[in-house]
Length: 409
Image (cartoon, rainbow, N blue to C red; front, side):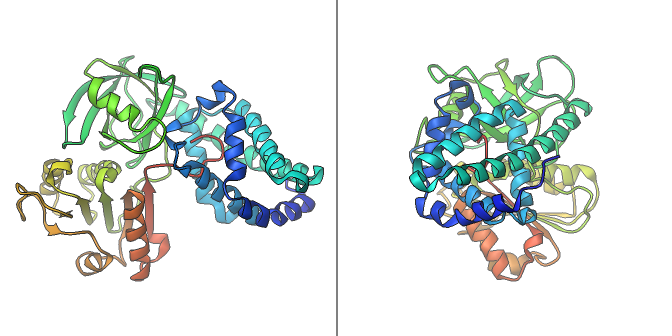
């Protein structure tokens, strides 16, 4: 168990908040520079989040400042800490990796803050870092133990073969993955993701990526549905393009166990609202399959938004699922329907999903809302629901992209 932080360390760390805020991303930019000098540690990170936009550095800066500001009330950071531990488990971060980050973080604070980074300040931040690190290590140890003990569970990287590949839209393909050892897999929680380590991309070294499981829980296989990406930054769409162009039945991939704190609460029987935009549909498909297959009768609404039919994935599958359960309602929005898109057949509503439409057509106040999609979609949905009076504890969301992981992302 982590030792309690000293009052002196808490006082000093809180006093550094204004300096950290004025420095912007300078501290985390420098931290990553120092950290990535070590190739072994650099390979622990998802480099797709470290592109020219600096989004990962911005996210980590926000996390560091939030930690410093709330260091005497860490309960408010519980969700964020759990997200970090889940990411670490997916990437197989171990206790021996933490001291590299400590050295880089303290070195960055010293380099950026200059004379203001006194020995007393560095000592306080070292104490604060290791206090949080010990909490993370302890939580991660529990998760690793549970994964290893679970039926079909494992730790680290396990070889999975691609059993089949299916096009879902012009930009999304699904891959069915089965264990190369022939044994079964652990049943994931609907909404969780898998972490992959790719060594096959020519000239790229080892790459890490997270992909949501798009199938309901089962013990034989997992399905992921991957969008061909072309984002700006370092190695734009490198892995997604490789999967689309080169991954075939028989291709072997290295996979870590299911992880993630964004998942359907299957013990709750209250109404559920699933909201997704674009490729954000992947964890929702897992949740929807789980609801239908459970036969629970739990009222569920699945509302999805896509630009048009050519990029709308799994539309037919979604309707088939809804036809199997009277308790499931599906509605699809196309922002700009194409010439071949027929209202009432391919989509139900034109334009963007709005909180006002949801207020009129779904039981917002009684439902638990799960939301996934690109950042603009999340801002519109989470903010919109909150403004219409939906309680924040009934809104749960996930986005794809850089997050605020302390060690690796």
